[in-house]
Image 1 (cartoon, rainbow, N blue to C red):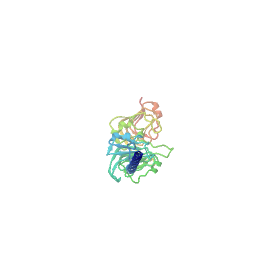
Image 2 (image 1 turned 90 degrees about the vertical axis):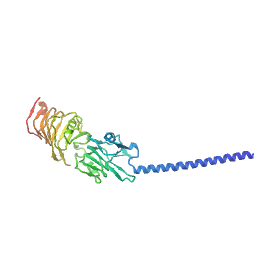
Image 3 (image 1 turned 180 degrees about the vertical axis):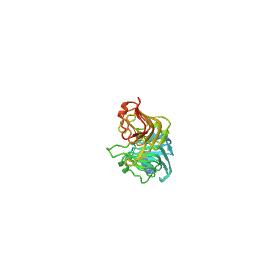
Length: 338
């Protein structure tokens, strides 16, 4: 009987020791978990991009299209200067903490979030289509079009014009912490009114020199072709059809001018070439001069405020009868040559 009692005592003691050991292990795991949780919380506060799913990293121009699309991260992180000849669109879609937001992070920072290096993104234009977007800590060299509310520029620079699609977008923007080297203006109206001619990067092409002409005037160009100055070419040009404007209608426009916030024309430019052939319906040369002959091979050609310093030749009487020339000027002969 005494041996049996000793055995029971030993078994109970071993169970007690095991329970104590398990309890100590639970306490140790709990402490480690709390420490990891604190580290995670600290990382979340100090870093803009805490996981791969929330950020896109730009190593070269090849990364831009995906990063700035709706499938990219809410924050687009640059690792150096990047240059592209493509018009860029920062699309809406990504969220941070459940809020729609996009950020171009053109800088690096230290542990205290002080900016160390600043980078430059060079492109013909960047169009902002997402609410709560910001250009931060670096420079966009090119024009920026804003078509969404609450745009901001904390420590950012736009080395070009900043153009808002409506007064609402401009009024909601915060530009106090940034810099714009060019003009800040509105190109558009209130909701329900006629929209701006260039509302997204996909609908417009910018021509800075003769090298830009062929792509801009092709069927792959924007419906509106915006000129930034006088351009001269020794090639015959074709304004192709098949391009839709903001309202889904086939149209092309050569915008040979700039305008202020009230849409008053401020500067007019001249495009010089031996010949320009119009192949798109509802095409117009507006507020500037084409120096050369123009041949029209489509209906509803217009010349609002524009000048043709040469002959205007229609490929059929139908095309001539559908044209609207009252607001323009032709210095040469207007005729039909089928």
